[in-house]
Image (cartoon, rainbow, N blue to C red; front, side):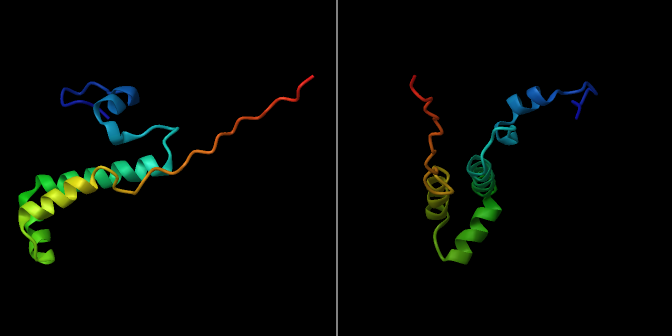
Length: 92
């Protein structure tokens, strides 16, 4: 990938610029959450799309916008519990 001037961009610079780009240690939950938030932000940011959803749901545009903004907090539900993988070394 390169900039408009033709200079190459490293993957570290790309990940610093775009938060949802991901990394090797990203979990499936984190990836899905980023995808859902990006989608909701796009729907809220494009008024025509937002009004389409409002008409389809028979709701006001403001109510649909508020619902989508609330859904952005935890779009995939609460995060999964992390299992602690601590191995206890045998006592001598």
